[in-house]
Length: 115
Image (cartoon, rainbow, N blue to C red; front, side):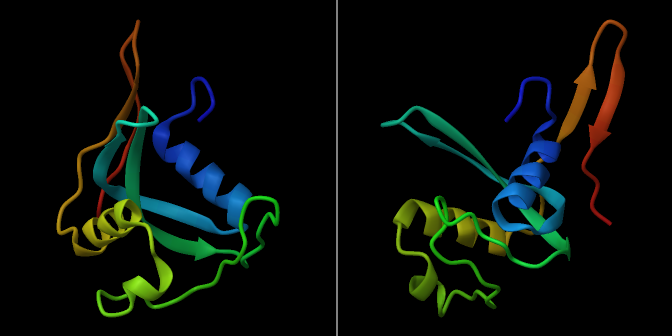
């Protein structure tokens, strides 16, 4: 995340940079903390908008679209902490509210809405 960058804009930028895919964040499905590495992860559920998968070979070994289900998730996600986050996102019925604000004066920069 860049300084001053909204979280939803950061996730869009990162996904585009890493995969070549344009997404539209739908909402936050979970917040997870790695005690060992002191990393806070915010997981978004997003909708595909456009683009073809283009991976950065130094960062990603393989990327493809798959229809992920609870039945086949173990074929694609092997790390238990990533599996639980993915299942949470797949099963999410609601999202955590998310807004971006500027202060002095107060100005709403953005809010994720679901349609």
